[in-house]
Image (cartoon, helix red, strand yellow):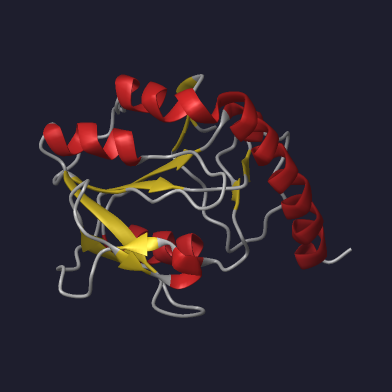
Amino acid sequence: MELAEVKRHARNAATILRGAAHLASGESAAGILAARGLSFDQPLAQRTISGFHPYKDEISTLPLLERLDAEGWRTVLPVVLGPSQPLVFRIWKPGSATVPGIWNIPMPPEENATVEPDVLLVPLLAFDRQGYRLGYGGGFYDRTLTMLRAKKPVVAIGVAFAGQEIPEVPRGSFDQPMDWIMTERGTFRCA
């Protein structure tokens, strides 16, 4: 089977897993992430972090972003410009105005400045212990991480429910690994 077909089947299965994990932990998971906060051992020159508004039954990073904003982090959200393009990130403070973006996902308005994050909280359908993630298939985060990692050190943290872990994510040479995975059950450095 071609990799694209393998990934399509894996996405279907992962969507079911994520739905079940959301039903089991969705109400409390976002608060648990916020209470834990971030802790990793990579020094950062800046403190700009990208989060995301939850899409469908994704885990929410919004309470965590509120905490990080209160701790002095500059918070940003991703914006999809178009197919086959890396994401851009606009400054956004928790609770500020958003506008509907692609798939009606809230994004900061166009007048908000764009910046490059130092830390990215990355949504996903499934993840493995090696740090690979299964996304929706658009390649937005893979392109973005490739671009950012060529410019500076960045930290990529996959954020998911623990029930989204699978033994091995099907991957190609283009797929970018996460440095860390954060779930309601803990945060771990990827192998």
